[in-house]
Image (cartoon, rainbow, N blue to C red):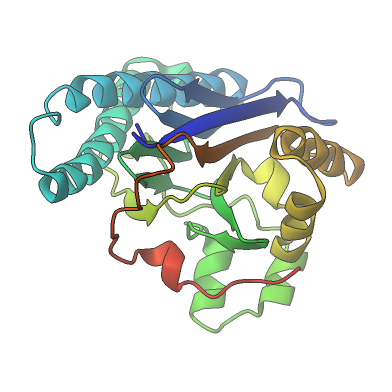
Length: 277
């Protein structure tokens, strides 16, 4: 966990206006510094089972793996945390896939996974699918994760514009998930954390209804503790066609103010261009 900062988390989830079951799962574990959002797919039973299994397996693997990091040198430990998160996603994928092979009603189930593990002064992000992680810093917002979706791949290839993708009915097609196949390659990235930073994890039940500049404006206008409810209300007002899960994590200064900050290497969050609201 961030040793010189205090973390506060505010989660919310809702079934939405159309679905009869909530297939999203989330985890807020302040003790581990672990926060997860998983959006299941594969029918009512399969989607809910996949997302719950993913959250449970990742949590157990991380808890077990962190026990061996305490005596490691700082930079080696940072790399080991990334390896740990990748291994946790892989183990969850194998567990979900194997279960589906033995239970025909669950065949084809899978889940997205977007999560954060805070360790020392950094946040380590693990990501599979089209749930998202955003960073709010100094009044601007950045999307830290890259959607594993057919539409995003078309945009990246220059075959669709972002405006065309936003109007498409194919937002639900993802190209990578936890559990649909036995093996999965998770994106893992590291972000420096400073006092005042906040991170938002969400399923696509939110991000399909809100743009980055609008999200940045909401973060400037509201307390972070109120942001999950504000975001959820917007998603519901704009259709609420999917389950909605939002987890906001804020980092505040719990350090001795007489100590100067440690020097940090730049990470992806320091080099991404800001988006002004």
